[in-house]
Length: 179
Image (cartoon, rainbow, N blue to C red; front, side, top):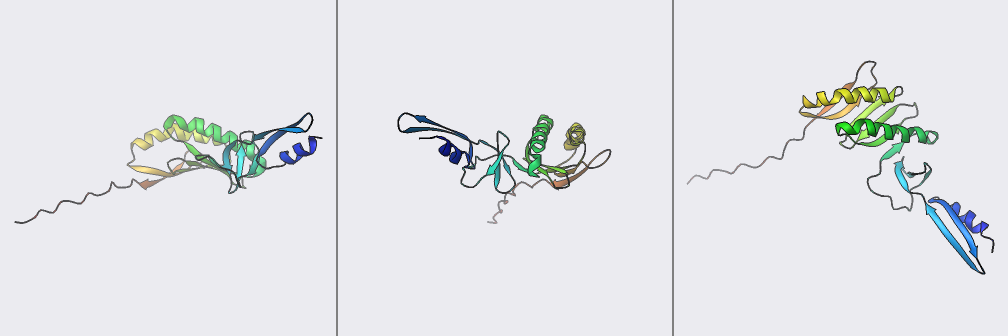
């Protein structure tokens, strides 16, 4: 038989990156399916493949620990690029990027593994992140608090919002019994 219709049908499956169908004489169809490998989550119900293609997450066993991306679908390449660059910039000071969001106005926000958010803004994302990373270690040594939000949208600096460190659980004191 003609392998083209089968190959066409398989290639239309959302989780298939590509399918190869060959006829083996006389009546065997040899099918090889290459599935998209998820690289990140995109928005609520899409996944981004390692090849940079968006496909529906429905019915897919999504690996745990994927980063979360979001933004206009036309900007997939920019989002992945900023993710890779911001990871490289922040890793030396022990921060891991878990989320990258590009809003419709073109402003970037990063989410870190420790729950902090970094609002990078629209322009000079790399320069702003670089300046932040150079100064943050000094600021962290003087704070008994946890960084909650960093807003880098200032001309020559940034604003930091801190959250109190969760107090260690109190150990109930033993009551002294009177005899």
